[in-house]
Image (tube, rainbow, N blue to C red; front, top):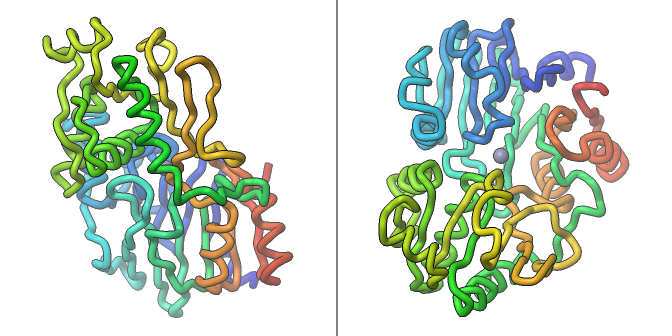
Amino acid sequence: MLILSVKATLTHRGAVLLGKYVACDAFDESKPLRVVTHAHADHMIGLQQSLRTCEKVLMTKPTKDLIDVMRSPLFLMGGFVETLDYGKTLQYEEERITFYHADHILGAAQVLVEDAEGTRIAYTGDFRVDGTPILDTDLLVMEATYGNPTCKRSFEKDVKDLLVSIVEKGLKHGSVYVFGYHGKLQEVMQILHETGVKAPFVAPERVFHVSRVCEQHGMRLGRLMLSEEREARELLERNLPCIAFYHMGSRSKVGRCGFRVYVSGWEFDSPCREIADKEYVIALSDHSDFDGLMEYVRRSKPKFVIADNFRIGYAETLAREIRKHFGISAVALPKR
Ligand SMILES: [Zn+2]
C-alpha cells in the first residue's frame, strides 16, 4: 500500500498529482503536465502559472472553448494547450494519460494515468455517477462533495418535472429568474427546452456565451436572447413572461422583486423548497450524492483511495465510510 500511496497525492494548493508527470486542477511546480478536468473555478487554480511553466496544459476541446469565453480567448494563449478527446491516450515518457467522460458540466473529464508498472491511477474530477463510466483502478482519487451519509437524495428522478412545474407557475406571474452556476444553468435551459417550455430565454453576456459553446458541442437549449438586447430588456422591465438565467453570484443584484428559482445541489430533504414568497430552491445537482460516490468505489475496486479534502465536501467522512464498508485503505488529503 505504501508503494501505491506514493503514486498519487493531493497537495495543500489543491493539485491532484497522478504518477510522475501529471498535476490536475491546481498548479504544481514539480509536474510538467497540467490537466484541467473541467471549467469550474475550483478546478482552474493557478492555471496562469501552469500556462507559463508547464510543458503542456491538457483539457478537452469543450473545456477549452468554455475557458475561452469565461476568461478571454487570449488567456490560454499564454501557454501550450493540447486538447485531448475522451478515450484518446497521450503517451508521455513511460506513462499513458487518457481522459474519460465525467457527467458534470460540458467537457468534464476523468483522468487515468497508467504507469510503467501497469498501475492504474485515476482521478474522477467532479461527477454524477449515473452518466459516468466507472474506471477500473488500483489507486483512485475522488471528489468528496457529498461524502457524508446524510447527503442522500432519494428523489432525484422527480426533480426535473418539479423544476418545469415551478418555472411554469412562475411564468404566470411574469418573468422567472433562474440562478445557478455555469453548466448547471445550461442544463436547466436544456430541460426546459426539451419539455417544450415556450417562454423566451434571456441571459447576460457570459452566461449567453457559455450557452453558445454548449450548443456548439451538441446541447439543445432553445432560443436565447442577450439581456442587453432591447426586446429582452423590455420583457424584464415590464415583468413579462420570460426566463432569465443568471450566475449564482448575481443573485443579490438582479430580479429582486421577481419570481426566483435557485438550482442547488445542497438539498437533501426534498426536491423543492419554498424559502420565501415567489422564491424556490430546486435540488438539481451535478455531483453524485453519498450513495453515488460509494457506488463508484464499489465498482472501481481500487486498492487505495484518496478523497479530495481540498475542495468543499466531506473527505474525512467519505474516507472513513470507504474503510468501514469496503475494507479498502482510504485517506483524506491534504491533511487539515
Ligand atoms: Zn465542478
